[in-house]
Amino acid sequence: MIVGVILLRYALRPAGLPALAELLTVSAAGAALYGATLALLGERFRLNAL
Image (cartoon, rainbow, N blue to C red; front, side, top):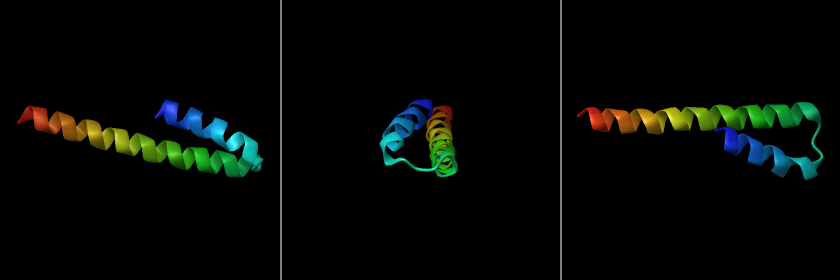
């Protein structure tokens, strides 16, 4: 998640977005990446538990 958020921040820098728009974009992406990571890890642990 951290790597994705950092890469997104560097990618958005040249766009010149207002700070609030950048914050909302990066926050939403971070939340999505966090949820995806938990889902993938949960799925992995659930399969190993069987």
